[in-house]
Image 1: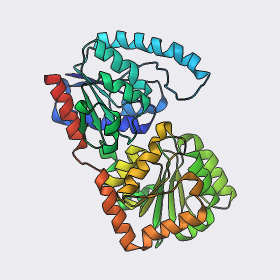
Image 2: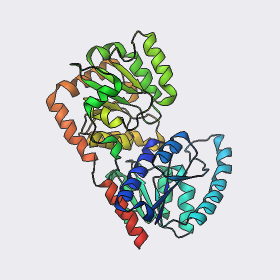
Image 3: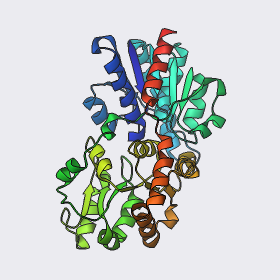
Image 4: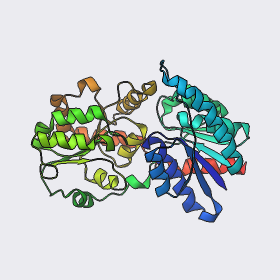
Length: 370
């Protein structure tokens, strides 16, 4: 059995693909199932797929935009070229089924798979489906979703509500192991984990650096900065007089397997509102402050955040409200007010389905068998 995985551009697209492939590998022996990843050529894609022993096919794809950009000229060349690449590689691989995580990288793969009569399952993890997923859903056999709200934008007859697959890499962490990794001594201060996404979040980085003094007076901080921003953040923190590792401030460029230990240690989380982070926060039952990107594609982060907040699962702060006084107030509430903390923890748990990975894997097998 051969399964093509497609998506890319962010960890939020890649880690669910890996979670499902790992589940199926455990269910079937390696000589009975084979995975190939079709997607863009990127460092993150290369690293994650190599680490999980998944073969790769690099496919060019033009990005769908809601605004005018001169990049359209390049995209106009990339898209037909990507279609030709996909036609060739799918003919060589001829998979039994395609699992598409969505986004522009999935478009040529889904279209060619449909033309070759290869069944496709798409997973839409956001409350507001992107343009690419709304388009390719028409060519899929099944569309799995995480948020009920997504139903209004997708073909009703194809929808299955599964939740978002959560990788084992974020579960069952050890708080003491996190302290060992960071060289963090035990302290009476609560721990704040700041997550900006697989690429970091420059806005959050800048705001956290502005409020380091009051923040560190009451909390220990583990801060995912993103690979590209790490040196800049460290330099600015040290310029302000905060010695890394000796001032309760622990910046980390990128979090891989160790992230589960950081989740276990954290008392509260500040995060962007990507669907994968929301599911991971829910799986670890942690109270969070969600800071959606103001101009995310299709406004999906704001809608994700407000769907969680509507069910009492998080505090949401827009970027223009991400101020020192308000952040400190919310952090104190989530660490000191047991009633508020417990209510939010119970609310966010609704956004984790421990069977999500298995449900999607089983649907893929059904498509193969049918």
